[in-house]
Image (cartoon, rainbow, N blue to C red; front, side):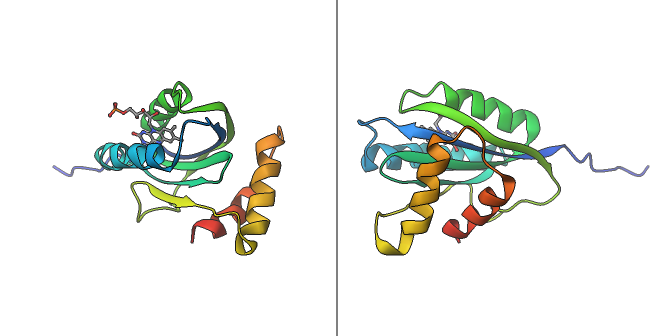
Length: 140
Ligand SMILES: Cc1cc2nc3c(=O)[nH]c(=O)nc-3n(C[C@H](O)[C@H](O)[C@H](O)COP(=O)(O)O)c2cc1C
């Protein structure tokens, strides 16, 4: 008998949210320590980028699993105003290496462009896919 692998539908989901004032770097490190093994267990990969004011997170994995995690993230009191920027089917992942890569964008001259765009995304109601593609450069 020939067995076939069942290929599950995979998606990439991107959201932006606002950091609560009490969510300092230590609190974000706590999120990371818990999220990494959680994501690994659920076969989720992704990246979390943050600045002084905003989070931008990429999550990739099986659609139902990513949607369930996103629902729980939306309820998390450590941030507010969570807004979905993109949810699309994928055949390839962008962040295969990371269960959760976390990167802080320091407010310095090297990051000015990224910070400016993230501030814009944080205030905009709609973001184009090409803007989000460009943003992945900040995570490389
Ligand atoms: C900005 C942000 C990003 C998060 N990212 C993840 C994540 O990638 N994976 C995860 O399991 N939890 C993440 N969390 C935490 C979840 O909201 C939730 O607390 C957690 O999934 C519950 O895990 P537990 O079932 O082990 O208690 C994040 C929280 C915040 C505020």
